[in-house]
Image (cartoon, rainbow, N blue to C red; front, side, top):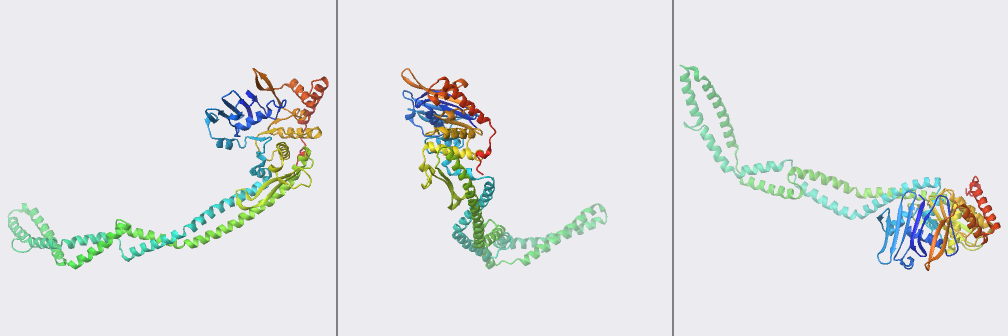
Length: 549
């Protein structure tokens, strides 16, 4: 995804300009103070850089910067003197933090400031980690994820030990309380039935005696009366058999009534009312009632709860053993992960040494002939998702001087050249942004070094979009798109304009940059310089010139 257009309104000296960029090398030239770096500052602002009301053009109430990309993404940033600021992506408002996250890998700006992508540790790793290292890193991350998960589980286990002991004591108390009751399945149902019987024993006995008496007790009972009816019907049947069915029904009734009588009499004989037994049953019922309140609505539910408690006790009793198993697993993973991290560190140091030497040679070709450059990996105090090491870049511009962190010892222009050297050597290896910006990378250069820098920039632009602010004709002659920034006065105000040059205008601009005049000789030299640059750009690329392996 490359930058397509940049529209800047009321930003510093810029009144209102719209710049269209293209693939390859986009060169920005112009007189000192015309606003070239201001344009780059505006791009940095729309990507999430700092911008305040002090950057609003004098006499204006707001500034607005809009960047569009080849995928259709549109970012708009507005700062108002009265209404605050706003950031919109595709018309939707977002925060500055969200903007920075979104644009982190969109555009790689190398300018006079030192807040550059190459100084970020993650980009050092991206530079060094080749295919073999990346494969080993995947294995490390698998182990690291497992170690992190198991370590967290162990920590939680250790923290939960006291709670587990309290829980185990409570479960054992519950198990003892239920077990002491010696419950039997459906005991409460049977107990309730027996209590109900004993509680009404007198009434039951009274009705049983009455039933037995009515069935078979004296001349007026049911069975005696039934016998008299049968005897009478037998006399009738001697003369007429129409009541034979009724007679049979009487026999059946007698059998059923005698069976009922025998059952009632047996029940009455077995009936034994005991107040002591009733007290015993009610005491047992009270015990069951209390257990039901705690553990379930029935004895069967309590028994199921007892089985669950015993299972919990069994699990809790193995807590310490499980913790020790987990501790051993964590120790094993720590050894495996540390071993893998050490292998990664060795692999990175090997690649970094070769890569550092190649970048150092390229930096020297770009005009810093005594430069010392080193990518350093050191063992870290603890592991991270990247391994067990830290990464930094050390640099010294002079022979014999101690190397320090890159951000502490170089100027913005030097840092830009170092970035160019890195991109030249590692072209195609890193996951860097599709758009790179070099702001006045040519500071203090000339002659052969300027040509070398120009060729390096051309090389980098073969695989991505490059925006380059320059004062050197050698670099300008390499342009795929040449933009000239001019400054003029209009109605008493300074106005900055951006113009895309055609081939004729390109020659005139390169001539002006090379000699400060537009004489026939200067024009001829400029034309030859552009022709030579174009031939270089179309030559088959020899990888040997930029190889670091």
